Length: 274
Image (tube, rainbow, N blue to C red; front, side):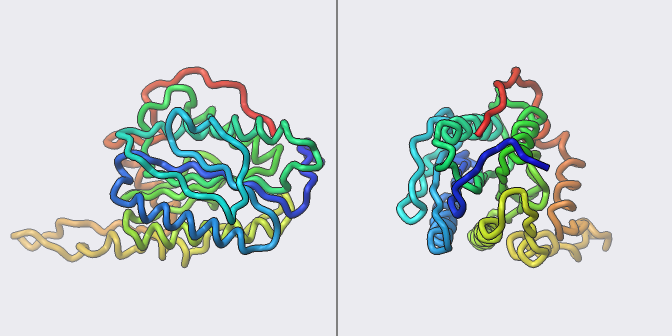
């Protein structure tokens, strides 16, 4: 199949960052910034050129400047914000980045384009991009322009992201270790993907990486607790794969606001090109 995108500079990659600055992740802001800094240093040390576009959730997510070499890129300060419109921020980032790349001379366009989203897993306040519209936008960029979207969800119940391929989503327990392991796994994925051409298959996160970032013991430490009558009061949740986590989240969706179950949204803008 001949793809319509013309990505003509071999060895050149772009990594766009979208970091959630909602209050839910406030206790782990330093760990997230350190993990992303380590990821960028790892990518800069690998073969090939890689440029970074960095953004945080909020109204400025779509206001991108030029790309910065990974070796010189800095991680934005994650100053507090009570809510995070993750869908709207990601939609704005995709649209702006697509416009930037479309404006480049064809011979300068990157061979690989990656978006890394680090989020607390909830969406509050998105009004422009609904889940289906955002999923379609991402699918277009992946299908036609070889983009890849990776999602690290830092939450107690971290399910699959509602966009892109499931093998590019990884959950992390809300601890320093969980964040570190998940971002290290994301960096390894980026390294594997940069070694192959556009649209070529890339192995996803391994079972070992998933368990390191979200160990089953996180939900198993109270499995044997009993009440006064001797009956078990805690049922262990088999947190082993992202798929199992996603099932648990969806089963409990009526009690928790998740980004794939908004109450309402407005019509989206036209999808981006690159």
